[in-house]
View 1 (spheres, helix red, strand yellow):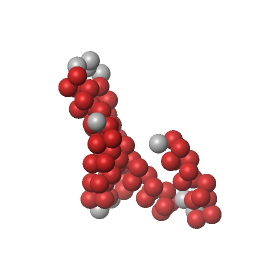
View 2 (cartoon, rainbow, N blue to C red):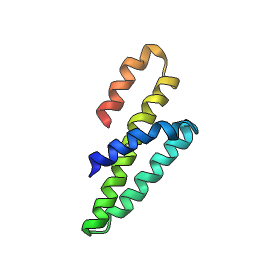
View 3 (cartoon, helix red, strand yellow):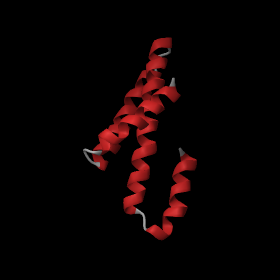
View 4 (cartoon, one colour):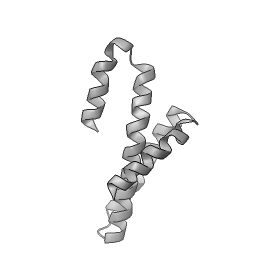
Amino acid sequence: MKNIGGGVGSFTAGFVLAHGRRKALMATALIYAIGASFCQEMNFWTLLVGRFLAGIGAGFNSVCINRFLEEYVPLALFSTASPFNIFMG
C-alpha cells in the first residue's frame, strides 16, 4: 500500500509545488505526521490508511526535496548532495 501511496504522492507533488516549495514541504511533514498517528493504532484498516499516507508523504518528499536541492545547493556540490538524499530516502 505504501508503493501505491508513493505513486500518488509523486504524481500529485507537481501540483502542490506550484503553490510553493515551503508549503509543499510543510504538507509533506503534515501527511507524515497523520500517517504515523494512524499507524499507532493496531488495527488492519488504520495501518492500511497510515501506510498509504506515509507513501504519499514519501512521494511528495522524493519530488519536493530534489527541487529544493536543485535551487539551493551550488552546482558544484549538487552531484554530491543529490545521492545523499536518494540514499536517505
